[in-house]
Length: 148
Image (cartoon, rainbow, N blue to C red; front, side):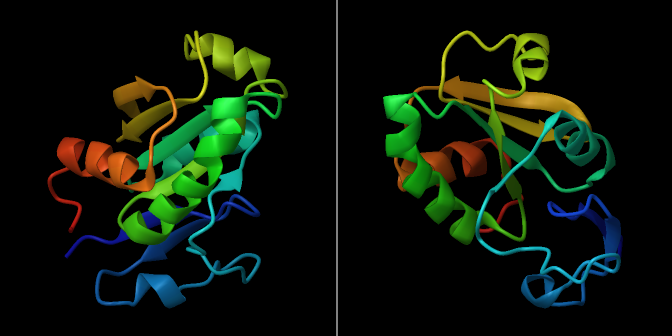
């Protein structure tokens, strides 16, 4: 069986995670932080690029801004979706105000926007606030291997 590569959202350390190991109890070998907390971490440009390039897990990124009403409304739903989708999928957040160059590179025209990456490339994207059930369904419809 193939090991997953999981990038720590706190320190950026790349961790090998054997399939037989309980992923929800796994800790980063570099900083000791739990790898899956059910809480999507806010990442900067370098953290975003590192997650996309080095993780073997699918990554969902929520592009948001602090002034955006729909983004604020969706934040609890996105966090609840992380509780449901981890450890099969990593959920992260990217503040488009702080990381304007990344948002421009991704062609973000409206927020909130969620983009699903796997194997270093974009698989799908959607814009607008979604409920927890809609986020989970959107991910699972695009990744049939993610357990229900």
